Length: 199
Image (cartoon, rainbow, N blue to C red; front, side):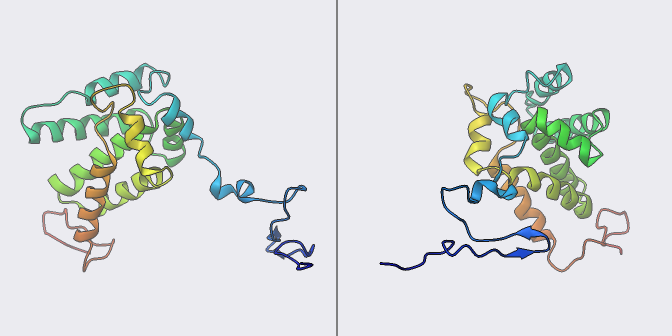
């Protein structure tokens, strides 16, 4: 009774030009929704409304259809998907991060599938830890921005098979493989060179 609650005192706190005052309540105060880190990323629209990327353009539709082909021999499947991903990365201009973000706004799952297959091939087939870790960091930036169940739910939207060859489980397994391979080495080492691990 008569106690002053957090944010009820009217005090203000500004640090580095940012108002970090306590939440003020319903009378026009700040809340978590005002914090940019809690806002839904732009590419969430593409993930939830068009996971098959039908509206992203014909190149994305054709790419998804090519990535959906499953080859009997696992090595052929892996190599083909990595080759398609590499070709699409270059032809779409996604080597530049800003362009990759633009493409993720149109086709979130397609960008994730591209990064996953490139990182996996670099790690598992080529043994290029450095390249795999850089690609996996980019992939993790996207995947970590949404709830894990949402990626798989969107990828299986109204279908019996995934729209794109990527899943939370596959991404998590790849990240663990890369983390395991990172023990005792720095990012400056290139273990994909013909000479073995070199600095």
